[in-house]
Length: 80
Image 1 (cartoon, rainbow, N blue to C red):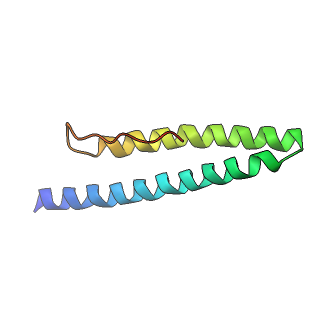
Image 2: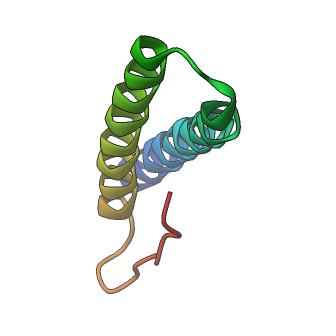
């Protein structure tokens, strides 16, 4: 019973992490689409800083997701 509960919690955690990962990937794609159209240097720099912070957060979430997998099972992620 205890192991079933732990596996269910791990499954819920993985689903939540995948949701966060996908949301950040969508955000990064939107930033990449909008960045060429921005002419204001201050706004452009803020968007670049936001993109860098989102990339770091995406890396952290991917590592956390990979840590929930069984030993020996790893995912190769695409670059963002």
